[in-house]
Length: 422
Ligand SMILES: Cc1ncc(COP(=O)(O)O)c(C=O)c1O
Image 1 (tube, rainbow, N blue to C red):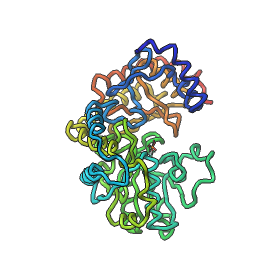
Image 2: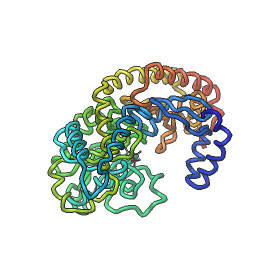
Image 3: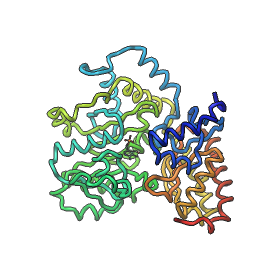
Image 4: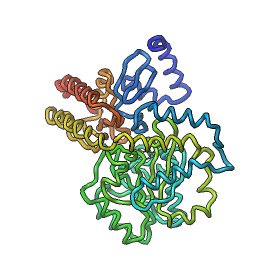
């Protein structure tokens, strides 16, 4: 019951730090999150003290259609009660239904798909698919990009602070500057097998590429017979106001990688969707097809219902309307406090606020949480405050985000010279 668990919270945090993850426990303490999460619903999380906060993390990108969406829960209960075959050696019908649906919503002629248990795992398998076709040829990715924490995904990622402790990473990866087509043209084409890119660099601060850049990357890949992989693990499933950001940028990759919100914040999932010609060697290789839980019926049902929820409820159109309101309010704030908010970058319901320094950013995050709005500092760049609520957030809740920012920043403003940057 809310409130009664309060005295136990310290105990759970201590145990979490001791036996699960001390870094994350300290991180939460620094953000000012000291209570246990108790209930999550739509765009909010209620903690054990009964405080209800607007969740502008969307559970770090998994909750586009809202926490504990009742439509998905009902479908999951139904799926469990059916008692269908959920495991191998049989295949299940629902996986084929999902494959059909993914084919119908994917851009261009991306026809074949395969399911895994996370975004990182899907990235690994996109990289393995490249190895099957291009042998040891290089995979080019972008500086400041993030593709996950498994060894292959880290080897492709461009955030050095994430990579350092795990070296040596895999050979055959190189990173170039995001948004500069000339950097890609410098690379010897006969050495390159694939280019892996996030259409919008999320952890770098929701960095949108210059106009036409992604189309130029597509053109280069066509000219030089290079496989283009788009990582839409976070930008996918409606976050930008389009089912996939690639639609907004009007490009079709050879391999599309998705995950996070496809599982509605409830069931782990990752997927790759690719052109049919890339699939021919898939069947020759058992290690591409081997996953114990990937494609299980609960994950498939969740993904199907999540896509239908977005389609049937006009979610994409509503995101574009909400984007207008939220971006107007954030831009107003930035013009009022240019000494604190240096820039704002974003699309759909995914914004990054560049703050003067990481200590001011951290103070704003703590004060926002005290004012019942959870925002967070990007893990890849602590100067950036991320604001990315679930797509089902109401207009009233959007106004509450702006009110909280106004209150917090007006208080922080007179103190900025005393908040250091170390
Ligand atoms: C762009 C991108 N790619 C891949 C991943 C890895 O996904 P997962 O955490 O499901 O392994 C993430 C996770 O934050 C991501 O943001």
